[in-house]
Amino acid sequence: MKLWTWLGAIALGIAVLFGLAAANRATILSMIAHARLPHVEPNHPVTWAQGPAAPAAGQRPPNVVFILADDLGYNDITFNGGGVAGGQVPTPTLDSIGRQGVAFANGYAGNATCAPSRAAIMTGRYPTRFGFEFTPAPVAFEKMVGTAGEPGAIARPRFFKDRIKDMPPGSTGASPEAMNSLSMPADEVTIAEVLRARGYHTMQFGKWHLGGAAGSRPEQQGFDESLGFIAGGSMYLPEKDKGVVNSKQPWDAIDRFLWPNLPYQVQFNGSKMFQPKGYMTDYLADEAVKAIKANRNRPFFLYFAPNAIHTPLQAKKQDYDALPQIKEHRLRVYGAMARNLDRNVGRILQTLKDEGLDQNTLVIFTSDNGGAGYIGLPDVNRPYRGFKSTFFEGGIHAPFFMRWPGVIAANSRYPYPVGHIDIFATAAAAAGAQVPTDRTIDGVDLLPYLAGKAPGRPHQTLFWRSGQYKTVLDGDWKLQASEAQNKVWLYDLATDPTERHELSRTHPEKTRALLGLLKAQDGQNVKPMWPSLLQGPVFVDHPSGVKQKAGDEYIYWDN
Image 1 (cartoon, rainbow, N blue to C red):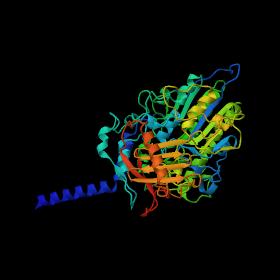
Image 2 (image 1 turned 90 degrees about the vertical axis):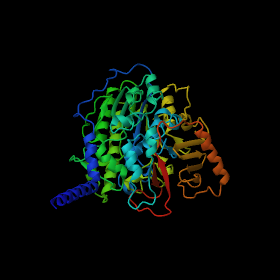
Image 3 (image 1 turned 120 degrees about the horizontal axis):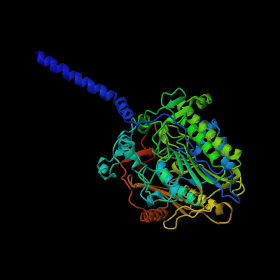
């Protein structure tokens, strides 16, 4: 009898342990993730290479300062009468770039997600031409996002376990080095390489997200100096720091993955990881200011790409406390992050002015894609439908400004569609640099169009693709095709810029013609360097965290 009693007690104990493990699965996984985080050294100062003590004689080519926000929605700045929380978070600095130069009324991101969009910017090419089609992510991330639907979901994500065998060697491990092996090909030519060949000193700050394989790191892709992080994100401050205010989205699998898995770290020119000093966006701006001062007497290219305002949502307490009028906590954290970004960009622009450089500097500002739906805020991309990961306008219609006093007219607004792919050729032309002639460059130099010297549209046709989800904009006609859903959406943006009236049934010939353009473009693309491991539903008319209803519009995003 005692034996059976002991066996019963053991069985009960095991059941209790399994029950506790199941109930605390997230906590346990979080502890495991924290244990796997790389070693990060304490902060140490960065010494920037010093330029000449005096400028060279003769005319100097313009500096190029490119500022790339992360997941900043079209409605997150006040330029177009919007802004976070109905305009309660002014963005005077970001607005000033558009007012002092040109605002592209129809500026398009290179993709609806981070990494492919950045690849388009850096190369001036559709990333599908060289296989950098999906955002690099750990297999554990893909599995979590591909299997964890929202509570009560009517559209479930899909995870393709059988495709893991087709991943590149060494890319499926749990270490950061594994994910960093998913890299843009080293033989792609970046704008940094083009400008350095012209004699520019080139510097990168913040998020790279184009891989860390040999030859693909920023300091190996044309940047003389690089301070930031290779992966797609970083903490802004440690989670329990007294100077930070956090917001977590419990419904979001992406958020649940990021908090335990992101370190608080940077690297300088491939050094060992070390802690930044203070809030990440502040720190990157501090160093950018130092770098401008160090290089004031020679032409430079400064690529400032903070992770602001991408999740994890972490605001500096000072900025959070400055917005007591915003009562919703998550919205207030998000607004505080936008406020901080605007202030730090202001510090960079003020340094250009203080050093006497602003009149001879081309400043470009944009966001890598639209605002994310998974943060649960409905208005980030208004008036456009859709969110990050969708090719609806909300996912790819980005704030896009250029300022170059004396060359680009102030208070100008350019109406025709342009894209991130045009930054490469435009910056090269401004610098008098040569672009590669041994490959297709999809972008064009926008300066003649802005000056009225080139008539017509810079682009008749623009393309986007993420696996089976593809989009073409031809003139004012836009077609999206989701092969996973056997569905198309056709819109005439000339009369319906916010995509409210779907026309594929009433315009079958136009639908067939645009599908033909997509097929022809696919013939110029190459096979993705690694397969999509997930298809995730992204709703078009409401953010995550909102109850899904039958009939709600959504797309399937491949990654």
